Image 1: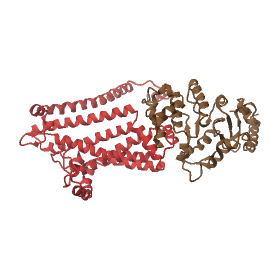
Image 2 (image 1 turned 135 degrees about the vertical axis):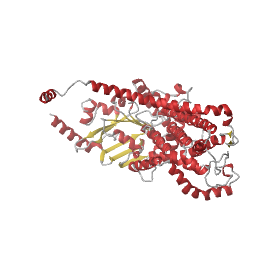
Image 3 (image 1 turned 180 degrees about the horizontal axis):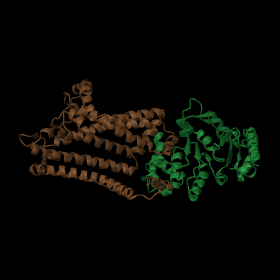
Image 4 (image 1 turned 90 degrees about the horizontal axis):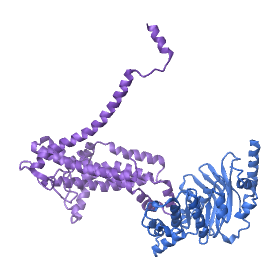
Length: 319
Length: 287
């Protein structure tokens, strides 16, 4: 019997797929389909659950929560305007700082300032910034950054306190250190996508610019930047999206204080930090309010990310 | 058979080198030469791309550069306004006299050279900005303080594009057709009124009608500018060029080095070429 089987096998290598093969094939197909759809369902489920849990709060306190400025659990007063303000303010500050440095780095690494090999090395190092965990950024902010910027903050507060941005002194955690760390966190995103935008400029455009007799600086400012503007804008929007949702580093650095202040040295709060810090001790009502805050945050980030994706699509720049 | 043919070519080319510097330029009045390109050797890294090519370019004439692919005609043209400086490893040995000054002199800034010697490229390459801003680009670059609208209109008229775009100056330059884009690039190049206009196969990406328009334009342009044009198309050289320089590739020393075979008045060169190589090329017997 064993002899017969081995003979059979040796006659030809080709065989039709067995029933088992066919089954595995079909099972694999179904499995991939299930996985794909389960992600979509998961997202829908998250939205449904969070939205559902937020409904009691909306019913009880109404949309007035969006403009309320007091968060007092005992008085059952919940307003998240300071958090919305803090989220937007910190993200915009981070965007200005991170955007400026990110685009500058992108220019430096794409416009033949360096030998190709150095460009590659520097690019990898900057991308490594994205690998540092948020909580490490938070610790670094507390123990390294805040002591460093304190004298600078004091100087600005003493001499320029008439400018609203410097009207208070830095007591430790606050908007400025938070935004600074946030800008470092979004820098790799902004730099990487801006670099792609610059690299996507056809060589013939570069040639045209230099052919007109531009200096390198004029070529960059008058031709490269406008040509890459769409991609750079997309990079900034994606960076903003990251900044809006960032939680841990901000919870450690922003000061968690419910106030609306233009001063960059004042402590503040953000939606993400509010959620992270209040959930552990929240009662039913508070959880519902926090769910509402989560919905607001989700909506803001969703809008920003969609806008970014749209712009990147329209300008034809791939990540 | 093939071996013999190669030998003949090699011999001819060596002969040609010996005569290259002597031929072609005798009938040009030295006073009329705006730009005198004397390229002894042009390197890309270790690669000798062009050797021994002396191309004088006469004022208010069109000088055509013809020859097979890889013969260095574009390299020579782009050396004239130092565009090749953008390529790493590029080295130019020789001189390019422009109004008596060598533009490869250490004291000369390539940016200043490019502002005086305009260039139109193979692919139409308008900037992604409005038609108006494309033309005004060079004017703004040179901090032109006069009437911008007037200069833009003059340049667009000079490039035979005004009538087609006068109602849509705010539209993006990239919205135009290929031929219109190329004429926009010409307008952009002539807006600052450079003395010399270099054109690197300006029609190779265009259809025959657009090509015709550009050719007619070139003939008009030579009244105001000195034009040098690289072309793959011998008929085009015959139609537009006053002087023609014929380049060939020398493969005799193992490399692929381009050099000037002969140069002369276009009619003369086409009717009565001095070199066997030129004769073969003009009759299509040379790849």
